[in-house]
Image 1 (cartoon, one colour):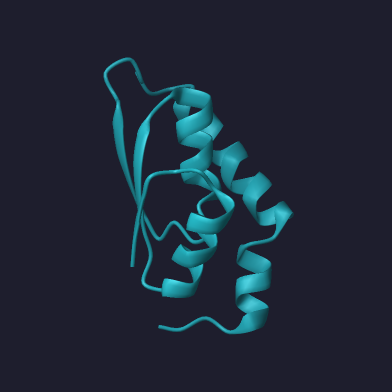
Image 2: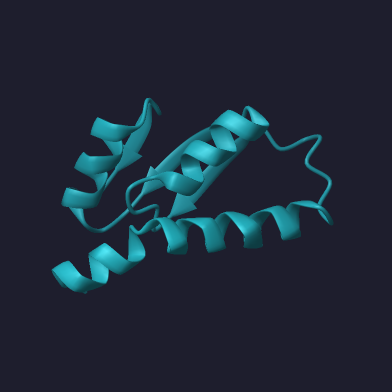
Length: 85
């Protein structure tokens, strides 16, 4: 399903990203991360969460999204190695 420009603006906005990262940090407090090195993020959008995993937890991340434009943005903005549409 293709997102509209308005939906993308909301999904890729700072408030939405901040909320996602807060939710992830809450979950990570109850998960043993010591043996997690590789992460597959399905529906990564522009890669904000993938970047957080990489920078904050030194995880290798592969991000996927059905929208090639989102992947293109992620590749342009972030220095993560692997993104696929």
